[in-house]
Image (cartoon, rainbow, N blue to C red; front, side, top):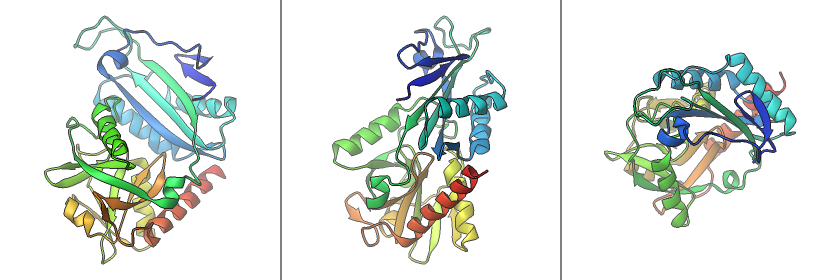
Length: 285
């Protein structure tokens, strides 16, 4: 965790930071969040993250507590104050503090919390070795396109995977993969088509997902945005996930079945390399 955090117009140490027990983010998970990567002390794809944050807030009718330009400035200040070279910035906005009532309060002011986290993104050991995942029924609510803090179903899925000695879970609905516990899921077919779930209420519109799709198209790879069955994933040449915290990471095993060669494949490794090149261009500006 970071030494300096931001809570409602104040920079504080993490030990000093406090949120009311009546905050609706705590009582109802009535809050949204964003996580953006930091490389070389610079925010990656910040405009896209801010656009998604605004969309999530709009879908829940939570007002933006400060202008977007100030949100970006606070993120950069946290990077500087915590001497963060590589890692993540977390933003959470709740509807605010009010008497506990399911109906929206009329006069609550949004609560804004931000902090930074160190993370080894470039040489993440899991990216080098690949992930082993298992499939689990998708028990989440029906608006997974909103990035809310209501993450208990995803937490339980991830914990089931960890308790099984694996790395992550892929969530399955009606026999088709939706996404990972905290990432978007992709497969590469044996005829070199990249397949990932189409955007809709079932998945989060990943920022890294979008960038990687653009990179793949620039490389001349065919993209199919559609649902794929878990049996199709078992037969894939490669599989991988995308997220702001992992960029591109190969999946080498699903439900105990080896995917492709059982090692990170050339296409997913190339996409990871090209995404880093994209990110490094942003840090140079």
